[in-house]
Structures are given as structure tokens and as C-alpha cells.
Image (cartoon, rainbow, N blue to C red):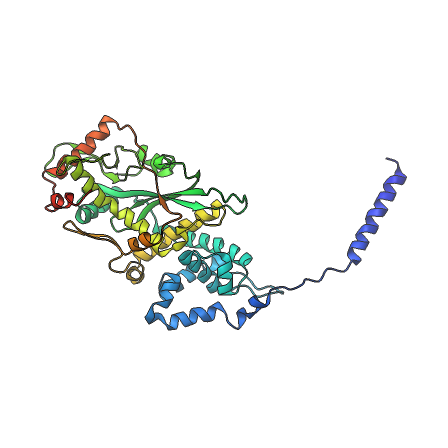
Length: 420
């Protein structure tokens, strides 16, 4: 290219840049709509204040799923993470409103559009607020879900299971759910993607381990547990579990175990029910009943979460990564509310959980909603038959024989007559 052409090209570029600078900027039609402009006169802050005034009627607790005191504590904990600065163009949405929006989304499962009308904030802003607040909540509540770090903590869990559920040497109840999501980016609404939630619950209905992973379509099974970091630690003996011990008045040493359903494998540290129907009074049927009592702890914990945080009960119109963050937030809030003395009775009032008093079962209130409102998400994992090793069968047999003999409870034979 000769010099004349280069000079001409440079001159043309300079002329275009000058014309661009002189071109008047297009005037923005509006910064916000009339609906959202009214937020200052009828703001969410005013709504929250009114709800706090009506505390005695439980309106605030129902709206945010926690008391005003826990709300303020959480607000102070995550405030530095979610606070935004005002600009020359607009005022930032207050931190209190950001938390209220997120809690209401988790509690109701309403769409961003519906929340937009309630809070008078654009759904685009809400779509940014919810994941930011969820991440801040998870970060602030990290210590509320922790795997026991030493043998003594595991033994304390086992003692509580033995006292409350009559299942000795049980150190947790394992369960999982499919949480459906619809990815709005790919727009594939004909078949939902599923997020697999795994959790281990202690005898006080609190999670000691959770894993939320994007696993594709609802075609996978409970085998995904074997891909979790917890499973690898379990196999590598890195969890500091108590050493194998004998059941009372028995001779065979057996490991401390997690109880699970048939979606999970029978392994050294995982006990599951016997498949099939078994005769009344049989050793296998007794074992299945006793295991179901202990495993019901996890079933109730998962049930309470979906009953309180209704966002889990239907497919979330979110990207899988954001949907996973929402699910994790619900789990951390569950432990936070269960471990707090003030919110504990608000979050799980009397009658929330199943109660088995000497074989007489009273169903928890969370089950009523499951019967009246069919779930579109949060579905149980599929049962998968597997071949069990002889060593693992021997451990299960030892438990079964103990429950049928020296370890029996007076009402188990009466209860067995009620089982189908």
C-alpha cells in the first residue's frame, strides 16, 4: 500500500471520529417506569415496617420465614456483601429490601415478574439481587453445615439416634431429591433438567453434609452419591468415624453406618432396606421397620424445607448454576433456623415432624401439603437394584438379628401388622 492511500485512510478515520463526537446522543426514553417510580411513596421498607408492627399475628414470620430478630441478624451479617452505592443517576436499592426480596422469593417461589409488582423493582434488578444475596447468605452461614471433625462428635450423633430412633451406631440419615429447573437461556422447556440434591441429616433434623450438583436429565439415579467428595472421604477413611464396635450383648464388631433407602448402595457404612415383601414377624421385615424409623429423620428434614421454602416445589426458571445456589441457600437457612432457639419453634412448630410414639405414628403437618399439592419438582430419587457383597450383607444381617432379639422394642410387632 503506497503512502497516499495510507494518508487518505487516516484522514477518513479522523473525519468519522469527529462526526461521531458531534452526533447528539439519543435521549433515553425513561430511567424507570411510572410503576417503579412509586416505590418511594409506597416502598417495601414501609411494607416491612408494617409487618413488624403486626408481629403478634405472625405476618412477618410468614412473609420472611423467620422472626424480625433473625432477619436483623442476617441483615447485619450479609450487609457488607450486598450493599450498593448510590450513583448520580439513581439511588441504590436498600440492603434491607434486597434481603426481603430474596427471602420472599425463596418462601413463595413466585416469578421475578410477580415480585417486581410487589416490591416495585424491575425484574432485571431482581434477577441480579437474588443470586447476589443467596451467595452472601451461604458465605455468612458456612459454619451452620459442617461434617463432624472428630470421633466424639460422630458418637454424639449416634447416641441421639439410638435414643430417639432406637437405631444404635447410626451416624446420619442419607437422602436425596431431584430439583427440576428450566434453563431460560437454552429455552428447552419440553424436558426439564434436574439438579440432584444429596444430604446427610443428624438426629436433630439438621444437615451435616449437603451436595448440590447439575446432573442433566431426570434419568440418573442415587449412584451420583458415589461422585461426591464426601463419598471419596468415606472410602478413604478420612472422616474420623468411630472404630467398629459390637451391638449390646452381641459379639460381631460392625461399623457405624448411615441409613438410606433403595436409591443408594448397600455398603460397609451405608445400610438400606431389604427388597421385596416379607412375612409378618420376619427378621427382614423387622429390620426394614427399624431402619425406616431412623431414615424418617432425613425424610422429614427434606419435607420441611420444601414446605417452608416453596421455591423448591416447582421447576425454577433459572440457569442451573443459579438454581443450585438457590437450593443451597434454602439448606443453610434450614440449619440456621433450626439451631437458633428463637426461630426454632417458629420454623418448625409442634407437629411439624412425624412422631412415632410406641408404634403410633402421627404424620407431620408438612405431609398435608404434599397430599393436596402434587409436586412438580423436588422428587425422590429412583430406586436402583444392585448386587450386594457378602461382607456388607453380613453387617446388615447382624443389625437385623439384633433388632429381632435382644434389641427389639415392645411395639415393633404391633407396628408390623400395620405395614403393607
